[in-house]
Image 1: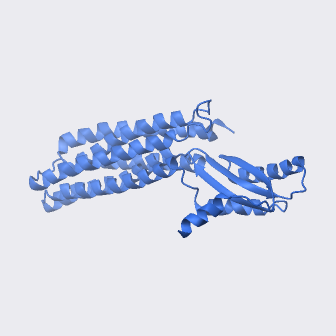
Image 2 (image 1 turned 60 degrees about the vertical axis):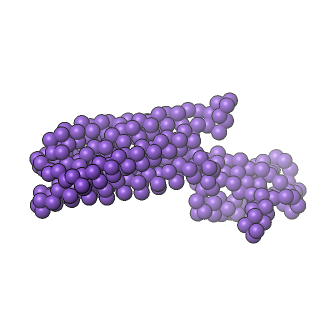
Image 3 (image 1 turned 180 degrees about the vertical axis):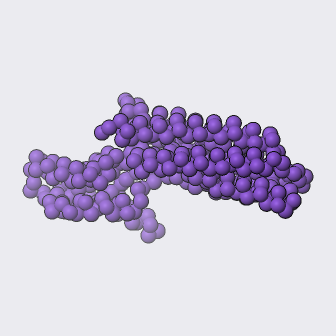
Length: 307
């Protein structure tokens, strides 16, 4: 694998790029806000400041998540990304509440927007930089499945719509002379931020609570095992993701007459087939003779659902 394709390197590059873009936009938007005094630009400035904090947290989370397993963390450190994502959601929520307070204040005490050309120029710069960053982040997510980079990409993608809304607010305020339009757009942007924070929070909690992989992935696992003519069945499939890796474990039912060596070979072939479909997975297969009567997790879950 070349350095450019190395998943760990891609994760790190994505976090560095995110921090660099956020810092650049903070300087540009702060300058524009001081010149225009537009609350819509203030909203975008607050969001970029939040982006920087969230991106720094993502950077730290990704660096920690990439640490190899050790004696105290034998499943690795992948959930550090989910913890970083929780912090990102908190930052976004806080910025949305701050923006709402300022926008409501401006609704009751509207202030004119000046030097609109400067504000629009900064927003166009923000759109171009954010487009480039989101494109790179999505490439990284496709290659690595990183939860923290994915969360970062989600709120930067939301920034694209926010920046367009800021441009619309500035232009409409200038054309209509209605200063109240500026804070109204600010409230709308705050609502959009809260929606994004809720979605990011849900993804992080799914990882931290060991949520099962999507049903389509579980069905793929069943199909791979069934394609093996030597497997008599499987049960008690359990899956989870840490954001950087997946864990797959199940009981594999085999012919009771197989030798230990033959059973190992069958299991090894199935494991390799699974890894071909889920390259970042840790596969753990328990072998047992087909037809064995035992207390199964599948049966306990069925009973729990029927109550």
